[in-house]
Image (cartoon, rainbow over all chains, first blue to last red; front, top):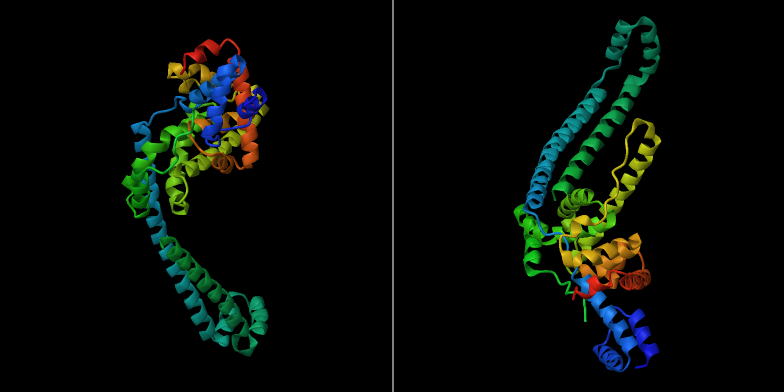
Length: 163
Length: 197
């Protein structure tokens, strides 16, 4: 190995990539060249120092803090699941009720109710409620179906989270 | 020859990962005890603020527990943890920089951002003191790369994954850092370093 090759070895190689044979060659060359010997020693000394740098030791207080946090976090999803169950159930019940009421709605009943609330509103309402409450059925279908879908999605999300 | 230590997963840690995934949260203590030192050291190197590094370490460990299902057990757990540490610490640093900018805007109120501290907390070991001080003087990218590669024993590829850069960039950082450290060794620190080994 020449001085140039050793310099190349020093600058362009990392631990784990160096073949042991090349290191032996570098050491052999260093025996005959004080400048290269110094450079090689410097590199190896630096790398040994970096590998053995001090660091933080484990602290039991930190371990306990982390464990406390994960216990709290571990309990939280169970509560969320219960809440989601309730919400999904409520949404589906509400959707079903609106659908049922909407389809059972009688056109005259809605007209009477509208007249009771406001005579002028009742006239407009009466126009809208012709053809046996088409509007009510349409709105009930829209709102009821939306609530059912929301309830179903809420329940599905809960199931996949639990899984 | 100084070579990075093996990065194979400790069997006790592998067992702990299995137990945690099976629902035994107490087993997570094994992982916390094993890696909190490395996480805190790397967080300190990134943030240069021991108190912030402690907060980040706690957050990293909680996120590790939350994300353990996504850990690929064929890969090094330590490298995975270092990746999370780098992300959380970098986010923290960005938030801190944002707060500092805001506080500068309210300079009239007398509110000041916490000053950056050097790596004093890592200097408990007298023999490491000079070397840590030299590492502390490196640019941020080189500082983190050299600690991950040499002290934490990650491979070039793992350091690249951790930092989100190419292996070539990591090698360049390592060579530059080594060159800088070598130049510093030629200074007054030389005698101290020679007594290191």
